[in-house]
Image 1 (cartoon, rainbow, N blue to C red):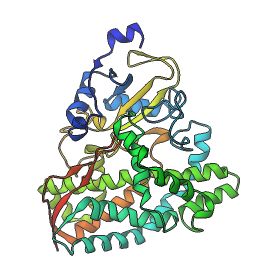
Image 2 (image 1 turned 180 degrees about the horizontal axis):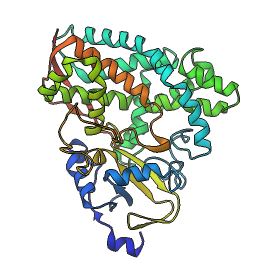
Image 3 (image 1 turned 180 degrees about the vertical axis):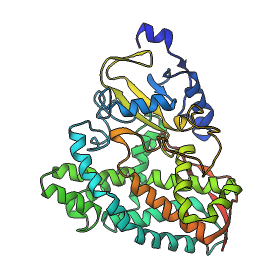
Image 4 (image 1 turned 60 degrees about the vertical axis):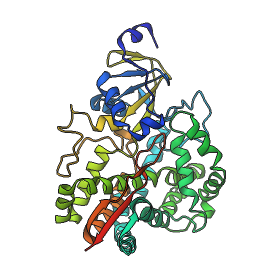
Length: 401
């Protein structure tokens, strides 16, 4: 940090990744956001912002804030990462543009619409099976069970080994944060999962139909390489499940804790499922941080930043910025949520967001149609992950229609 930056930058001695912070994250996020446009986190030596305007500016300037050096805490240009870089998340134009075009086509609106009927059928089956019990774990029995059943088939994964998906994804997101005890534990426990992913991402181990097959068709046409095709499939295996699952779980808790919003949702579940999910993403972002690396020496928000510095966007804090939304801590499914940054923003915005939205809408609408009443039966257990936010278990009482 330069001398001028030391004088003008709020320096915060706090740890967003302690157990205490992960269990109760919002006070620290509020402190980061309200301390200044940009702050310096002493413990980790990184820049950060929780202001909505600044976060969108960072996301929107892919030349000054680059992704190719890692989108977590680790600068993968200076320090070797635990895995090969993502072909889409950790790439800059022009390579990123070429590969993203392939992914956009594989996850087009037409593709997602074509999957909705089968996903809705599975969602209804999952909900009705769960309702055979008056009490259940809404996280495991609904939010996890549904995507884990529906998405792997749509991708074209082999039937065997799917149990490793969540273990691998846990490591992927733990590794995005600081290299702390949670990361070390996840790394030590993911050997079998890493081997499974290395096996499953290869073309010969994937189905001949589905999203993976569409990606490898682009290999045959010469648009991407075989290696890039495999890495795009790996992106599904590492990042295509957890955030959607956590978003669904967060939505179920929010609805159960806000009876007026549940009543409103019940009036038209098909129409309002999207509104529920978007407001949940805004208020309870399942991926609360997204990182960038400073690409050039520059001034930003009055602060001198140096090339290779890490900059962490506090997405959750930005989504609760009172400068952007009135009463930001209130769960309101009638709110205009446009502008929330739970999926990022700019050229690196989540390429699978249409799929995630469809998954959440199908399950939530099924809950709205089949469930008369829901309430949290005991305190939910939070998932302690450096880069994810939500619940591991949600004991919930249900009453069927």
